[in-house]
Amino acid sequence: MIQKVGQEKDVMGEVYKTHEAIQSLDKTISTLQIELSATRTSHKTGSLESSPDVMRSSHDSFPRKKAFMVIGINTAFSSRKRRDSIRETWMPKGQKLLQLEREKGIVVRFMIGHSATSSSILDRAIDSEESQHKDFLRLEHVEGYHELTAKTKTFFSMAVAQWDAEFYVKVDDDVHVNLGMLASTLARHRSKPRVYIGCMKSGPVLSQKTVKYHEPEYWKFGEEGNKYFRHATGQIYAISKDLATYISVNQPILHKYANEDVSLGAWFIGLEVEHIDDRNLCCGTPPDCEWKAQAGNVCVASFDWSCSGICRSVERIKDVHARCGEGDGTIWSTPF
Image 1 (cartoon, rainbow, N blue to C red):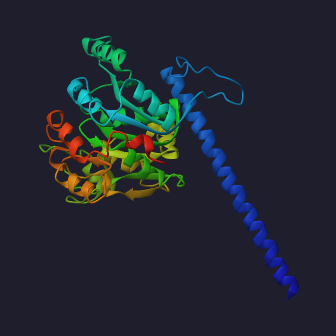
Image 2 (image 1 turned 30 degrees about the horizontal axis):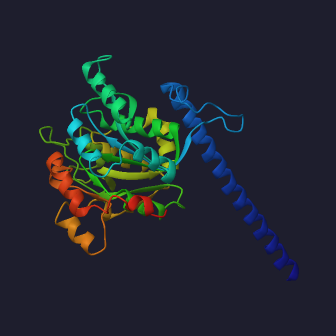
């Protein structure tokens, strides 16, 4: 009997050692994937070659800057007024933007690709705006109305190649964001390896060709009238480092459905991913977010469901910021 107990202890000890070894191997594989992803993307885009941070040593061969979160604001050539409205409200400008990166590890960039015509007037306009504000991430992507999914893949790949962040966030340019609340919300999940945070929904799969958000591959989702699997609404969502790396590594074979938010959800549905449904990422505009702020529950993001963003955001975002903003100094004092 004594021998049997001793044998059981030996077996449990071996199991524990094996479990520890597997965990260590998982971490090593994850690190290697991130490095591989950064190398692949840099070869495609030349982002590392043009970086001011040159390779420093054989042990530090990936000159990616450390960050807490990288926020990509999806924007279009025609959206200059939207960008300016964000610069005048929740996004710091100039030296404050650099200070935010340096002191808080928060990177904020407008993400945009290129036009189909090389060096077009559209590209030159963005170049001029970039020289003034220095707040763009230019993507190796041709802009187009039906190319948002491809653009999102490219954003995550290029962001992973340039910044070693804990979280990567995509937000639309007609959404109001409280950066302090976003940072503290994400910080609560930083110990989780694969987390997908957003306002989760499950809309109908639309098979009719004449309607907006028509899904040509509706038949893949079962019988007519079915709903999509749960996924984060496209206005704003965040993913952890491992998931952004997964997108970067597997970018060529990730399938694109008609809608970007559905596509992202599809990439994660078969993985060991924790879905976090956080309704603070999809508050309404005043009075909804204002009431919540007065009750001490400041929203992370605010927009109007009816417009898939803030309705008439250029005219209204300053009012939303005044009534629902956390205060311009909050981000500097927020611990995370």
